[in-house]
Length: 232
Image (cartoon, rainbow, N blue to C red; front, side, top):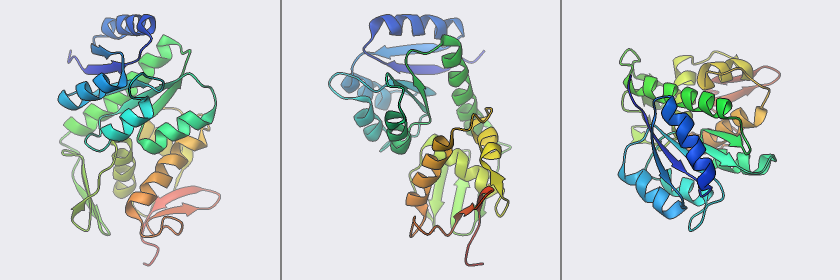
């Protein structure tokens, strides 16, 4: 069994010990850090398949850490928030988090989220049957996970790349939010519109000339979304 490396950044040492125990029992290798500054350094100097990141951290909070991390890395990030409201969740997704989990959480749910994120990341990085795809002004290579517009590299997160690759492989096809969630998140859709909408909003800012009037990631009212060229 391949042992995937996980970086756990949380200042709650009791929770860290418990989470480490469950993750290691599942065969994961776990590195733990207890403040944001050391966590960021560790994340940038080592290779991980997933980072589990708490929002409330000493020295450097989780949002600041994520923002700096995304300047150099697209490693999947599962954010932990102690608040049940949507504000922290939406903020994390906008900054590049791939998923979130509210504290207190069930360890079974944590393990399921971890497994899903790592599976998607490793499959897209290691499955050479997935061919590069080009359409309109864009190119996406799943082997290198590089996305380009007009030949210029556009930095995207792991989840953003997954979403773009799915859209580009299925250009001009209309998908419901449920279909998108099942295909990209590889999970059952729980009618959480914020997750998909935040990612699409962020992608439009990255690739559209005018995100308020998107040309490529188009909303099909009453149905969902499609990837096309509105001028064709």
